[in-house]
Image (cartoon, rainbow, N blue to C red; front, top):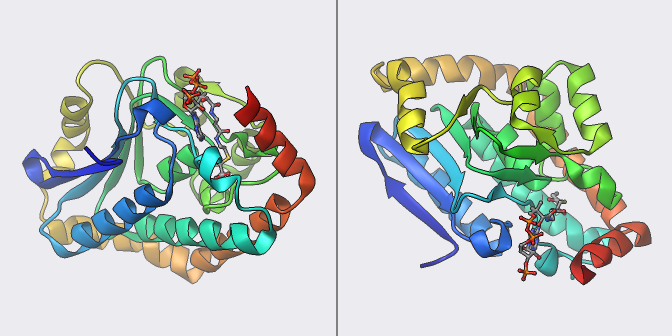
Length: 251
Ligand SMILES: CC[C@H](C(=O)O)C(=O)SCCNC(=O)CCNC(=O)[C@H](O)C(C)(C)COP(=O)(O)OP(=O)(O)OC[C@H]1O[C@@H](n2cnc3c(N)ncnc32)[C@H](O)[C@@H]1OP(=O)(O)O
């Protein structure tokens, strides 16, 4: 089995699963390939909604794969990876169909950024999530900060990003980051959450989604996401960031 799976589910749902539970579903280049693939499939087939989740019950996604990306030493080297993922999250954000992140477990750093790019976030009771990039002396670098400021009140978004701490599922729901808390069968709960939307014509859902994507385009959100990646790359190249990553890898 590869690092990800793509499956067509009932009700016209397309399901992308990060399948690296042994690495807490950390994102590597293969996962980026998979996300690019599923976004192309979702844009071209009769897909009613795209759902992202992680394999196993420990993590949705633990962000960038530090054992791979710590090899990126300079700002220029980091910018290539960060910009590619920022482009992927921009495509995910702008997809003209509903998108859902099923947070089956912990979401850390870039994992929270991926979840932010989805229209809805369903959190398993007991999960935790945190934009911990600040603890690694960098910012979000895949667009998650710019997107969070679009989706949450700026005071809440800035507190979550600046505190760089883990939040409980209940806290995340109270803050408005999670749209629904579930336990039991994740896909069953996801279909129940989407049920009334899924019986609408695709054209209706697409038209509603375009009301918000046009707003984001008008406010140059894609360009702001690209600038976020470039700014993160500058911080990435600093020695303090490399020391923080080395500490994690040594543990
Ligand atoms: C722009 C995005 C940005 C970037 O790309 O740099 C980021 O995403 S920065 C944030 C990067 N992510 C992290 O800092 C998370 C690091 N991981 C953890 O904090 C924990 O692993 C946690 C909370 C996700 C899960 O903790 P738990 O105790 O359940 O598991 P372990 O820590 O024992 O980890 C199990 C196993 O997975 C490996 N692992 C976990 N996360 C990553 C990761 N992000 N990259 C690479 N590998 C990861 C960990 O090393 C263990 O491997 P093992 O071979 O068993 O030692």
